[in-house]
Length: 133
Picture 1 (tube, rainbow, N blue to C red):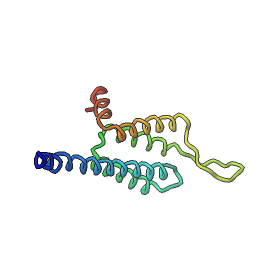
Picture 2 (picture 1 turned 30 degrees about the vertical axis):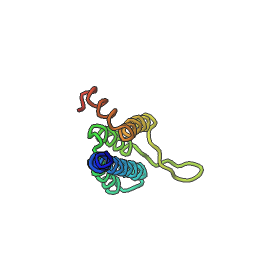
Picture 3 (picture 1 turned 90 degrees about the vertical axis):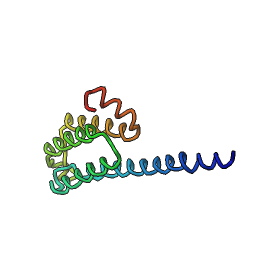
Picture 4 (picture 1 turned 180 degrees about the vertical axis):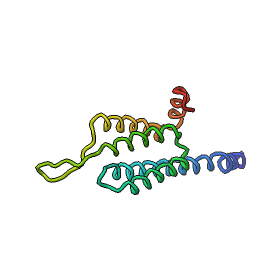
């Protein structure tokens, strides 16, 4: 009986645990890529740096099997918000601002994307229900 138990652990459970850890690590890399993109979303940062961060996000999302629709929806609104960012002179010196309606869209899609990353199965079901399969 102990041989059967060892075979089950070695053949079924161990690979599942290993793959789960790898998937979690891949999803963590996506969250790091989102952070990088968010830091480069302001107009004062060169567009090429923003674009590189967007490509890095897409690459990590593919590896982590994050649904493409969620990444594309976030990138679309992040780019639109970046394009509307403007320099503003304040009492503390120049600062960059983004239109509040554009920022609200970014936050909505960012929340949706992070939910999909944290709960991949629910994210896939949500995407299918919305016709984004």
